[in-house]
Length: 179
Image (cartoon, rainbow, N blue to C red):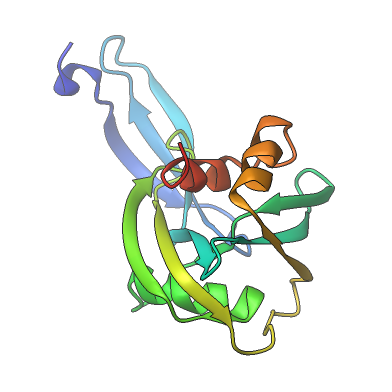
């Protein structure tokens, strides 16, 4: 089948209840074969960033923080949201500095992923920062409480293999750096 044959036609859209990180949209969509009209939920957001940040000695700057969806702390790569008017590199550098206190380095774009294209309309951009250094204190928001930890490449690989790192966006970013 072609993309046109798989594509649903949007008949209308209406705003739903706004959430702290998303704008809710309800779309009335026409099924491409049956013509049935179905309501579909879309969570609209600015783009996101996740970064693999490596120190001069090659250690990965990682964060541990409580995640409300799973109700426990997770180990993951730093990341966050791209502010309006900001490009993803600027957001990656800002988020790393705010969450961890690490700055500087040489940065390379690793590509983007769709966090959950079934219901999200945005991208998560992955960046690699090499040679970052601790230069300032964390500046987390009132809604964040983050522990910074440095892991060797071997420790990152072990954490992925044993399931300690399970955050899909962190795994996606790490997979673009480590085989």
